[in-house]
Length: 445
Ligand SMILES: [Zn+2]
Image: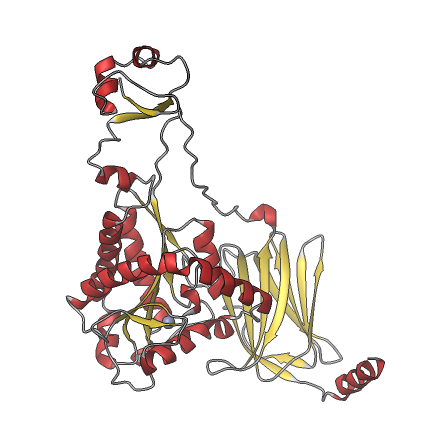
């Protein structure tokens, strides 16, 4: 063991001195953090530390030189009030961020990939006190005798990519991340204006959310459905057509499916996520098996409807819903679909996807598919389920009474201020016979 450590030390010392230019700096504002990304000409050794009174964060990069202009970085609405830089005598490039609120810093480097070269990522995480607590909504427990609590149907709308990850690139600099957030926002507006629905945007603007972060957010909101929206590229620009996908554990249907799943699943590497936890992966696999059958059926039913709707105005890649191993669809228990709104790599489709009209047509097809599905399968205790029941329960006060020893129908009626006949009618009773433990609906008086 000692020998190995010794060898490692020697190897580390033997690493050649790294020198890098900082060529460009980007900033992304997310609700819970601000991300700074430094594009580097090569690998760099760095160090960060915080200073107080006033709050500052210092980033030192060994043997480097800033070649980018920091003045044009849009730091408004970020925790950074000012950026300064200086170069030390030993060649260290120092960057000082003056901060206007408390943050927890995190930094890591990323190796080059197809989209970017070497990067240094600096995350300024809002501290607990500054971050609004996620809205964790518990299924309301129905206690007999208390008002009936109905809830809205929660739909998590996931616009693919964002921030560091532009997604697929189309002609004329068209970026997938911009097209899909426009469509996602329109789906949001449509559901929000529909009574009984509570849509949630997974990412609200131009920042990256990890694939795991996306499904986690859906779970935190107790989503009834997860819809991921994309507009992808294929190596062959002739490839065209929209498609709707559900998860597959047994590989993808066809070459395009394999290609797309591989591309979507590598988004974390581009968006700036270090690595997935292996243990997490195994656990996820187990959970997945347990609850997948339940959510698979729902996923298919929504996917079929959305597929049919889009097919009314767009060319479809296949005449049926396709399957592939998209990480983002692996949300145990939550029906999940992924909509590829078209191939941004196809000039004709790129032109359509860019237009407001086509985007809103696409959004309508998705939103209507979702609504149609939930109308046929409304989750229990939702406003929609009760509306579907002909408003019977809506006409009730929402109260119930559990019959206990000694109760008579007339006493229950009197105690609740309703007439005996109304109480009979609300419960479909032809006589005044009731039994202990029976739960009676109390009509509104
Ligand atoms: Zn995509």
